[in-house]
Amino acid sequence: MSGLRKFVDKIKPTFEKGGKLGFLHSTFDAFETFLFVPNTVTRKGAHVRDCVDLKRVMIMVVIALVPAMLFGIWNTGYQHSQAFGLDWGFWQIIGHGLIKVLPLYIVSYLVGLGIEFISAQIKGHEVNEGYLVSGMLIPLIVPVDVPLWMLAIAVAFAVIIGKEVFGGTGMNIWNPALLTRAFLFFSYPSKMSGDAVWVSGLGEKGAQVVDGYTGATPLSAGNLEGISKLGDGSGYSVCDMIIGTIPGSVGETSVIAILLGAALLIWTGVASWKIMVSSVIGGLAIGYLGQAAGATDLPGYYQLIMGGFLFGTVFMATDPVTSAQTEKGKWIYGFLVGALAVTVRLWNPGYPEGMMLAILLMNTFAPLIDHYVIEASIKRRNKKVKTA
Image (cartoon, helix red, strand yellow):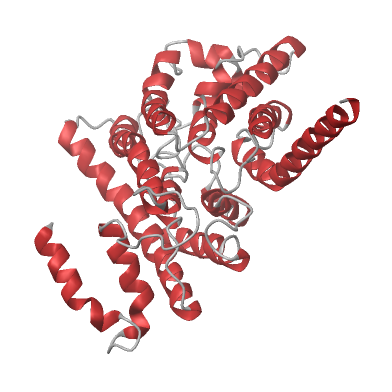
């Protein structure tokens, strides 16, 4: 690393303002601060002195997403081999998964970071770090066979309209990754719904799949046919859903992989455990209420392990920019995310997955929640002052 540090220091004057490549200062600064902790120090005033800057926080989220990404790569190949009756070994499964998932990451980062770098150059500002996480999230929440040109358009929309127009990282109202998925869902619904989109190659014309294989996710199968479809030998067991050997978006299928990421985020303090816990409580409450009301015969805990509920709860509802900031607000925000997600699932037959809409809606209302929590706190304090 010392050799790399010397090389960076040697070429740095070229990219400083006034240097030959000074117009690329923002781009150079982005790469330098990604590789090394900034060597700037505070000169006056009170500041938190810590090496953990925004890039390091973002990197922790990226690391937490690695288990879901790795399992998603394997499961992509596994689902393809199951659908077409192929007797593939481990490395063949991994190879197919990489061929399908890697292009999603390439498009996500090329388009997203490209827009971030161009925006920074135009404004003369530092490159925002937030897309490090968004670029990692986006390929994990889309179907593996989504056309790459569609993904590129959706990423561009999310970064430009959902982020840059608000001022960049830290100023956006909605989660950029979820905006990407929402854009795809409403603009190209045939590529984001149905049974054929979740398994690579299943939607191709003339595809010869194994008899009886549909590619339906547990969420769609459970909503249509109830627990009988999930419980028998032809369906998906609770064990299958916990391990993740089921069709679905690339990163959302494995409960184990998601919980590993959640443990890291909670241990490092990067994500709020209050939002995670309250979201689970909200989902369970409406899930069991729906079962009691006859809306479904699935027990409430099924709602947690089907679809993108846990993935959204752990990695997107906890986004520190778009979620509630007050401590009480986090409990309210998380509960409403979980409750709304399951409500949409149970009482909107045209849309079996409700997590995306629930998080985006609560992103919108998060500032309002914080406002009323703060107002209530001020009123309580004023009452105490008057009584004293």
